[in-house]
Figure (cartoon, one colour):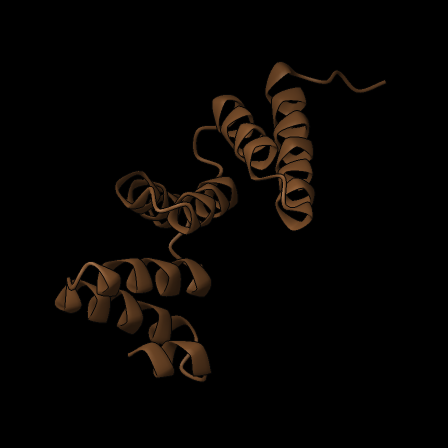
Length: 122
């Protein structure tokens, strides 16, 4: 039987927490969703998708400073998420940081030049 390392167990647990967090978010239990995303990140600090989803959750709750940090961390971990660039751009535009928002939108368009939501926001 192959040996399962602690890193593998942490990854499996973090992914389970991530999916559980998504279920809670979809069910409207935002506190439980946030808890799951934070627990996943405590296991795998560079879990890009968990940062992105926690950022969105915080953004929707009006906690924009922390949301921005999670969006940026997500993109640092994996710079290939069109939706995260879009979400970051929307957050920046809502703060009237238009040049930064435009940069985020252009990054999204580099990844997917046919993304209608990005073009609309740009």
